Image (cartoon, rainbow, N blue to C red):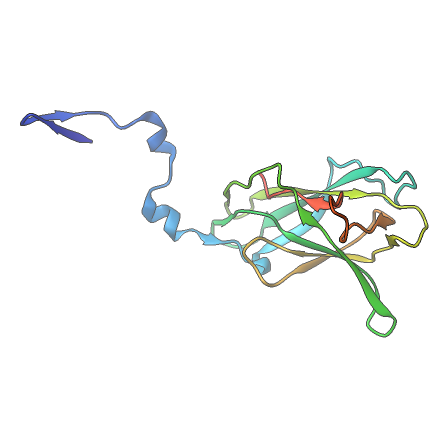
Length: 175
């Protein structure tokens, strides 16, 4: 870096953090991770129990996002998560999670073979009129339109879509 002051050329060192930041060319070369290059799976770290609990308390489930592609890619933001119950002939009932606004998203860079994660927060349900017993979670990664499905092992979930302050929400993708 060079500075010119009163006709004097002064050389200064770039800050140490600059060496670790991708250049504008490198950053623009990174592509958004596409659904087809991501493998999703339930992973440890949540409080939800297989089969569910009848506590009517908020529990968590963690999803790992693994880059199966051959290129480094980026994810930033919140995945779209919708729980589905039923069939097309019987009718499908859904519950779409809202975004957890208290955690701001950051850009996550995933090298080939790299893994990130995100957390689902939801109210475990008891049998009532206001529950869903989902078969699958349909998950669309940030900045994508195609989704993947995971079998839902966590039991009943209280429906919160119409709530003023829903307690079923998804956190951003994190490292």
